[in-house]
Amino acid sequence: MRLANVGGRAKLLASGSVLDVADETGGRFGPSLPSVYEYWDDFREWADPLGAGGAVTGGGLPPGVDPTLVGPPSPWPRQVFAVALNYVDHAAESGHRPPDDPLIFPKYVSAFSGPISRVVLPEGHVDWECELVVVIARRAHRVPPAQAWGHVAGVTVGQDISERVLQRSGPVPQFGLGKSYPGFAPTGPALVTTDELADPDDLAIGCEVNGDIMQNARTSDMIFPVPRLISFISGVVTLLPGDVVFTGTPPGVGMGRSPQVWLGAGDRLTSHIEGVGALDQTFVAER
Image (cartoon, rainbow, N blue to C red; front, side, top):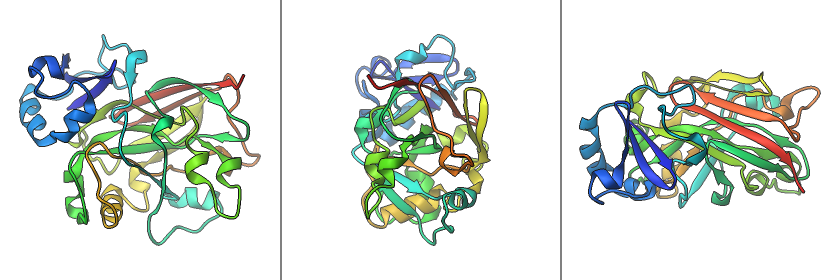
């Protein structure tokens, strides 16, 4: 099943059709995606018989859906978690050894945007980080890894765009702020349930800048896979429906290159995950 946030309304992309969830259910679910996540089990009972997502374009949306009207699959999560150094080679290019436990930091919801956007460049060094993003469906606290996928609504594509000067400033790094300028958390184009994917723990992931490949990996390279992340985070906090987890980026970021490479005005960043979809960001100078 694929769900999209089109014009602020939950749309079910089923068997080649685009169904407005609120209209089709007489207001039982929707109209927004956050309200769907609150009643996820009942929603799945209604939606599953309608069929799988059907044919989609390379960007992850069916024909007839205007991608410029598509917003984040979870547009205002109550909690946003992100994971640092979750691929061995990314830890190495960042000058660190692989962590013994997941390293968690926040992103802030005001940074969220849909899959196609223009991002205003702040001062500093702006970098890319393509990531698999998980949306929570069921309240979760102290969830064992074996049960973790059962608390997930689905996955989507994300970019943890980062301004490295602020991120690395001060005696304690400013990860949350350095990664939360407006537009620094594009996600989309749709939420894809795991039954649509042959193996949700092993997906091709990557991004290009102006057509040049920068990241090219598989999510199976994660140090801590999704079930371990959800178990670890829920061991401390209670995860809520609609919460979002950015699961970490593979190697190939600009900061790790020699010489280092930063995004500039006019650059185009495209990001993709196998079977999920693609993002398209254009960067513009701050006025």
